[in-house]
Length: 143
Image (tube, rainbow, N blue to C red):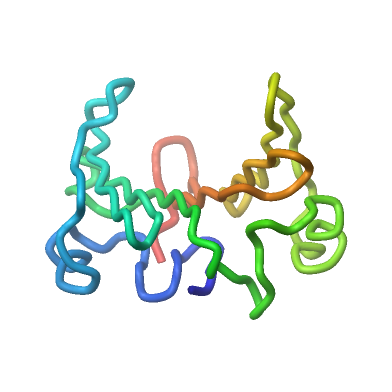
């Protein structure tokens, strides 16, 4: 399961439509609308430990992925469960700068240009989020 910044994860490519995703990985275990944004429809896949967000205002294209699957890699290097400082210094060293936000029990590292979010607990990456990068004021940079 390879992270492809700006593109997606493995064969899940930003801009795919819901039927194409379901043909690729099957029906979701759960579907819901984001209570904070009615334009976002979220498909949850328990076995894959992934949530896929489709944007209604963009013809229901795949635009955001949250992944907690321990098999996620970048350049064949594991991402989850890795010490954050080591990961940023080695595997993700080409992605700079990172913005860091600290909360009571976790930290969030964000790379805005590639729209990568690393959620960190106990100084290790717990899960990650990947979004379609923005282009201009109101657009997305679809692959």
